[in-house]
Length: 378
Ligand SMILES: CC(=O)SCCNC(=O)CCNC(=O)[C@H](O)C(C)(C)COP(=O)(O)OP(=O)(O)OC[C@H]1O[C@@H](n2cnc3c(N)ncnc32)[C@H](O)[C@@H]1OP(=O)(O)O
Ligand SMILES: O=C([O-])CC(=O)C(=O)O
Image 1 (cartoon, rainbow, N blue to C red):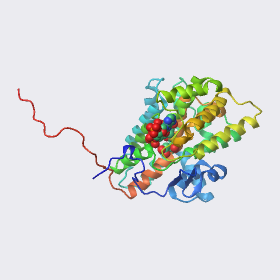
Image 2 (cartoon, helix red, strand yellow; image 1 turned 135 degrees about the vertical axis):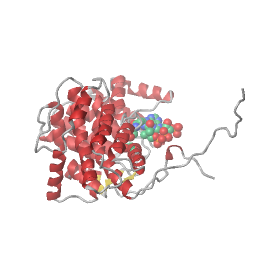
Image 3 (cartoon, rainbow, N blue to C red; image 1 turned 90 degrees about the horizontal axis):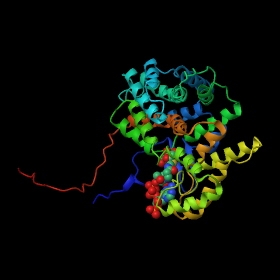
Image 4 (cartoon, protein in one colour; image 1 turned 180 degrees about the horizontal axis):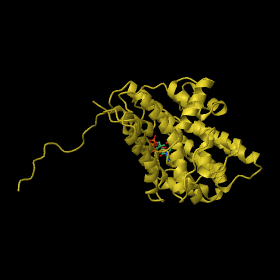
């Protein structure tokens, strides 16, 4: 008898050597390297190569990859014009998904049948590069300004901040933003990666797969939760209101944004790193904890009391929005697109792994409808 498992919880749907999670002990590794070490010692570019190739690059290969990423920042003119034709109020995730899907029209030869061809490999790098340009461009275009072209010699993290604001960011800020990108780059077979893999398994092109992943990441139960967390914290207003707010939500069977994870029964290691990041930034800048951050700390305390029996703790989305808003001054609608930018390195690595060992995803179902009904005769 086939057993239906809602949400495929605990059902292995692939074999992968890209990343691994120990959810009981809060450990995340990319290709065997701990996330803590990667954040401390590596750059986002290095991590992207690690995810793609399985090994850390030497200096020459890394420099070459940075150069290639830089050459691929340019967004096609037609896609640029298309972005001006979209409503300025459009959510950046919808714009990003549309633009990535549209890129396929320029690369008809990039495909799953030739995963190692120069054309396909260059399309995969183009996706990682263009993610950053597209998100930064929409910040400008949606406000009625012309995009700022990329600047040669800047890292991926620095260039994104530069293209978004027009100002060259301080190196300490760049290091923190780079760490955020590393933390979001990969997370085994999560919903958006699975979505990319299902699309890839039909031998669809990489742009179709990654645009499907962007659409999937946007949902509130997945990457979109980082935006909902900020809305929730602002709705709570201050730490004193947190307990009543959380208790009311739980009484009404509503979820708490940024809490809980299918894979972790302890606090997500990335939430610890992000929380430490904002605490040490505030300390170094001689500032006080903001009302929002105090509220978040109190929400975490109350949730620990009320939800830890279910293994519900902060996930990566809980503190990331506060970090983006308070350290980098990034608007809320851009939180999930930044997640997508970072995750494009994981998605493209999985796309490649999938098509090289491909079998189409085609699960089965348990039919619960009616059988053999007679069509009513008139
Ligand atoms: C990058 C990311 O995608 S990280 C996740 C981002 N998403 C969020 O932050 C949204 C809030 N969290 C959630 O909705 C869930 O925890 C998910 C979607 C992340 C995981 O869902 P699942 O693994 O299917 O857990 P499920 O929904 O079965 O929850 C198990 C139990 O914990 C409860 N629970 C899970 N998350 C929460 C939460 N955030 N708030 C309150 N209760 C929760 C459920 O109500 C359920 O309780 P029950 O057993 O009494 O019915
Ligand atoms: O793994 C998941 O289910 C969600 C995810 O992408 C992450 O936490 O980064």
